[in-house]
Length: 156
Image 1: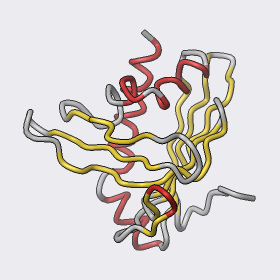
Image 2: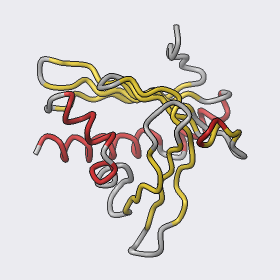
Image 3: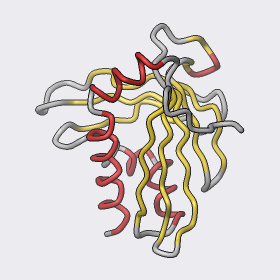
Image 4: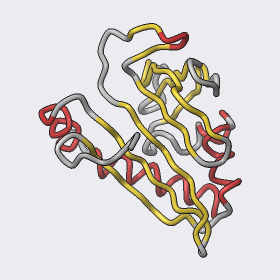
């Protein structure tokens, strides 16, 4: 199965967001909305490129403490399945170009739930050491914070 969780290599986070799946999907796919939640506050996000198609570039920048924007994520979309799944990696850049420092592949899923949307981020790593490093860097705190910011944005 594509995207099956391997606890030795993967980290996952999920949350029920009390908003329709279309609202959560739009917050992920509309750059102006995405910028409002993608990076933990008080840092700010700017979408440089969001070409939502397989092979399309996905580049974000961040500003901490009101300073200049710096590169944050440079990657490539692998799959964009309308309203249900987004897969991206930083192992590739836009146009399927190999990236210099691959780190993750992420599978983001959106499914209907009686209370709104079941939102899940499944983040895969090349080996256990990289997975553990990501966990120690604060994966659960960081990805949990941005999921909460996403929920706050769409739950209104």
